[in-house]
Length: 421
Image: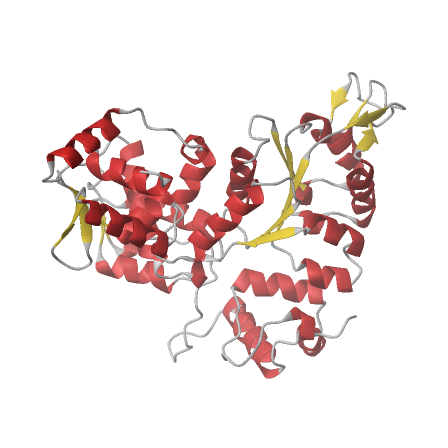
């Protein structure tokens, strides 16, 4: 069993005798691509230690080999203590595996994470709100050589300029009114560890300049201090903002952009992998039941409830799906969760067609109008903002809020095609 994946799959099958598992399930459990899992189960079947069960989709189960020598080797293998990998020890990896469904997009992200964790390169995580950016950042930290160090997360969107220096660099006693004691900053706490700057696209120009200097010099001074403190940290940044567009608009420093974007990882939205919505919903429902001391099958979705989940655009992504499932399970009076038990946090559903009995709300009318203007100008956002007589920043917020996407396949949603402001 030279392959850790092959050995892991064999132990997994042998620990559950009598059960069969399809390739999709094993892909989710081990976070590996289909081709890798296919090859491993085929090799195990060829060795005679696994068998393919009849039916569709194909499932695999452990089996005792007929040859006495092979049976003895299998027993010796199972008696040996399994090597616990870094991935199996990582809480964030376990959390990320729960976000993996049948679509391979998240498995590709997993491979990017494994690659990024092998070095100290700066990583920029791109993705919409609720898609799991902090989980990915923690995975990179826990799988890297800095996994034993501290992980410090800073939400730049919630950090005004007046608090930036104190929070990032720390302060000396008496540095300002109310500074009664010395306080180490996040940079100092992240020494030999990892610093996550979440929502870095919301950082002010002044704060960007100060951060750039630290990245270049790897030293800083506490607020009110005069002694330079050297620091060794790994930087991970995350944003749901279009940083390239911000650079063209001079809202984000170009030199800082290249510093933080040495390696980028893009997380797909839930809308981009609709096949995963029922899979994840069932998984979150089972977890809700287990957390509340109920059998995992004590709650089930009705077909119309799953259809309603599939029709919703999920602007809050996985985070919103999980909370929606928990609320539905709580409010459902019986075992079956009906469509009427599902209550969405956001009103950004697909706008229904107006009828004689119902006129569209102002929100629905605005969503439809903005979508029509964007399609009319081939998603040139500068031109669309001019037509709508709003700023491009407001337009970006509306696009995100309403979950708008190009409706014609021929339209390329490409910021690079837009003229610089």
